[in-house]
Every structure is written in structure tokens, then in C-alpha cells.
Length: 253
Image (tube, rainbow, N blue to C red; front, side, top):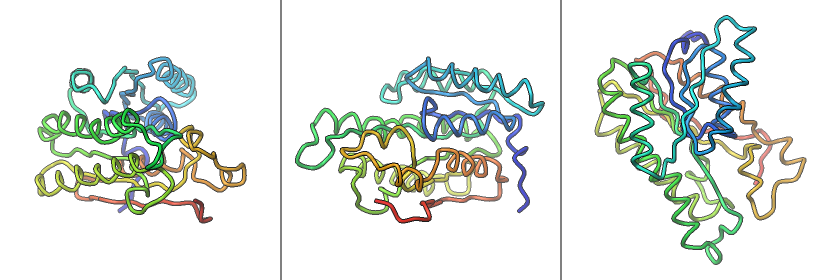
């Protein structure tokens, strides 16, 4: 399988959770390699900053694509339906959807996690993934090939310090993915899940004890996950990479 980053050129790709971290880096990587990215998040100002960065880079790169900022709250079904319909109407299709929305809270242990924080984490990670998946599938199934990528976490694979709500939500996303893969086996929609280990994003600043400078230096970078998503979005229709676990070389907590 010989792949080129140019394989994403002209594709219409929705990135949910594009305002920071892995979602922002993925949006940037896709756009500067020629994709038309619909960047979705609650913070419209951050999305416009992303759009401006792509426009600046596009002035020196003939292959660059575009970014369309789109305010979306994944916890709100109406917001998701409206946003994905706008994306499909703009380009006549959606080739790839990347679900990268995520949050966490400092007070995350079983003894201190509040019901409100539980609800918010489950709504953002799990219910949001359900809303986006169920809404986008009728659009994707009308095409010869389409792909949904979920940026999950190794927290879905093993217990760690990310907190019970975060881990429960990430494991729940596995249920959505594997259930949908089973139900739609043999169809035109492919599913991939990326499980990153510790990654130096704004999310880890929400830890009760943020990582040290040494741990940050050894951690994955958002661009590492962006490059992986770029690769997945470049794969041909007969290839399905269902799961990818990517962790720092140095073991980290």
C-alpha cells in the first residue's frame, strides 16, 4: 500500500473538537495537505484562529485546502444535526469525520467526582460521539467510501489516573464503534479508533497534578496524532485500520 499525503486533497472532512489539542492539529494537517476541513467546536474564536493560520500557510502552498469554522456543541443533538447538514450541503458530501471532542476535570476520583462533572464528561465524550455517529451515517452510507475516526485514549484499554468518568466514556465509545462496525459490516463506511497515550495537550493541565516538564518533553505531541489521522484519511477504500494504539517510547503515568 503506497500512500501519499495528497490522497486527502479535495476531500471534505469534518473534525469535531477542532479548537485545541489533537483536534486542532489534525485539522491543520488535513487542511495544509489539501482537504476541505469543517472545523467544529464550541469556541468559535479558536476556530477562526485556526482558519487564519491555514490561510497564512495557503499563501505559500499551492496544495493547501481550506478550513470552515463551525460552532457546534456535541452535547446538543440539534446543534450536531444542523452542523453536519451544513457541512454536507457545503461540499455535497462528507468523506471523513474525525471525532476529537474531549474534556476532563481535576476532581475526577471516585470519592470526589461530582454528578454534574460526570454528566458533562459522559455527554461530551460518549453522547456526543453517539450524536455525531448516528447523524453522519445516513450521509456517509450514500457514498462509495467514507471513514469515521475516533480519537480515544489508552484509558479505554486499561485503568489509569484519568478518572472514572473519562474511562467509562472512552470505553463506551468502543461500544459505539464496534457495534456500528458489526451492524454495517460490508458497507461503504469504515471505522478507525486511535488510542493515544499521554499527549502534551491543554487537557493534561486539568490533572490534579499536571505532568512535570520532563514528562511533557517525553509525551506524545498533538502533531503525532494529527499525522496518524492524516495517514488514516489517506487509506484507500479496501483498507480498514480498525484500531491504532500509540504511546510514548518512555513509559509515563
